[in-house]
Image (cartoon, rainbow, N blue to C red):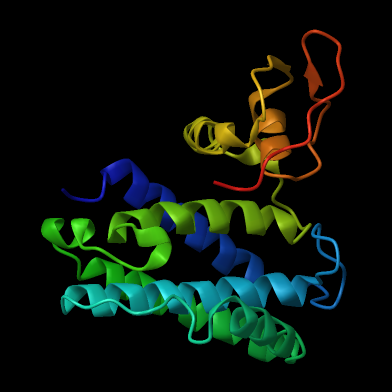
Length: 209
């Protein structure tokens, strides 16, 4: 198995979009679209996750596995809180470096490497690439800058909607634009209204799959 060319292209586009945003002026201490998180929290989370996925790949190449974050979720959360206090220049440089390192690490993958097991959700290396696609696209919109869910590609919108469909607690026909439905399933404020076709209130979503 190899990484699908369309996914590789989408990942490059997502990372380049992030790089471009990092090179524009914005207040890193301003609130993000995520309750309780500033833009600095989002940038730190992305940088730390990119570094974690780099480590997953490096160990997988050697036929080994390692935890996504040393110390688990508590250590992850503490690192985000600590990193969010860094100066804007440091935040930007850290994410730039993390993106470049992740790209370079994945560029070394052979077709067989993408099937190697990793500890991230007990999946494969390819699963981490798909996860990064989700994280990069969604969290770039969370920065509340120039990029919004309305700009998600049809391919990403369809993928995200399918991936998040298990969040629906029962069958329901949703009415709204594809990007709005995808954003709502992701727990974000949809850019345009989303309603249930039968007029009932929207259900409370299950946790992320």
